[in-house]
Image 1 (cartoon, rainbow, N blue to C red):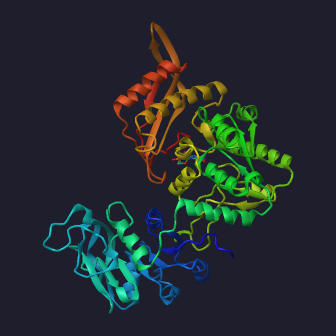
Image 2 (tube, rainbow, N blue to C red):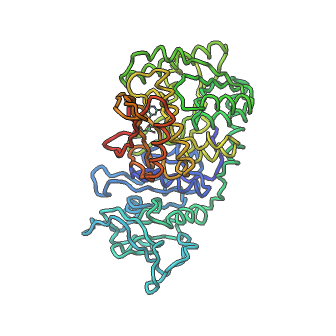
Image 3 (tube, protein in one colour):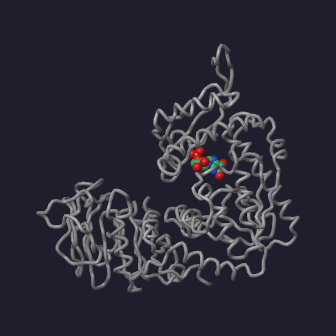
Length: 529
Ligand code: XMP
């Protein structure tokens, strides 16, 4: 099989740590390409990438567990450099005849790392407090999270750093290119951890730092041209970051062979439908079919108030419209999707097979079964932040590149109760005011990860001028989160909330009350439905 990329590659073997993906992201940020595989993955699959080195992640187990995860033989037989992190360190130590024991004291949280006087590439350019008697700087902090600890190093290994509780916080067998750290260099609580990962990749494995958006584009364009040949590619463009960047990349590769179908279902935010048509159609001249299907969608949602029912109807309706357009086109050979790396990663927790999931949230999940397409997924190796960088490099407008996540069923699930055009317009106006004020306060790209308005299915009493009012309630939701699995409510400035509330009540007809949601996830969810 032809390799998708020819970048210098580090393989991260996942032993189930909650931080495994972070190791990959930290490396990619310093322009080193890497792939994450379960430690159980087959040798052929891993070695086909011709790696420059291995990183063994942390994991929840003890090397003494009955079903302990193992260090695959091919890793050491390859003679390539290996860096073991936490559990990964313990695997290496145990394998080479050192001693791992349950610690009296569980070490969890920050520790100060003290480097020993041993030249080694892992701590190259460390630049800060270094000797025992020199004052240590806060940047020397490392994050520990382990029960077992290394009591004795194997022959050939030297301790290269320690902490108060761990005499062997980091160790190396420089001649055999084997390195291990007991702490987690990948987390933000280890301020210089990225330096360690980068030193390993550059100075131990010899990576050249060839993972850049420009190189990725050049390579993918060639790859896509070969994959697609003369074929015709269909892509459902939602206006979200992933499908937009996939479209831009494919357009660069195969131009008019790409047909983008944008379904305007009337459930997007203010100005978004126009922006998609303008950006991709009018300005960039993509082969874009914009389908106006607002009435169809509104009709199918009439009288529906149950959120799951809304999702189901919208999903089915979308497929119906998309399929109709596809059939009109005649021959279509490929279906392109904006699947990204977290959707395809083979994780140690989920077993062995590469979970090749089809993103259902663009609502095209049912299509491949209905029609005979081959899939094209040009972003399947990228993390979200890399997709954004790529989008900028491809010249997409900022509003698209930095768009906050938006659910596939759109405003239908933020318009609680019945979805009517009038209520959608009300919600759109309130949401636009909130977003506008957040943008002005510089809180849209940074400081909050998702912010929106929801329209509640209740009315409350108010007074405006001398008039008693009885109108709808808008709830503002704004969260901070790393992964959208858990989230906290954003501590927005009171002055900002005050401005938003005033503007919504004054400018949006039919709304007389604004509330701010202060529920974290869990127990709440980010969306209201
Ligand atoms: P919750 O509400 O479950 O949302 O905390 C987590 C993230 O997922 C998004 N979300 C959806 N995205 N279709 C989607 O494509 C959906 O039905 C859906 N529901 C929630 C939500 O916006 C948040 O980013």
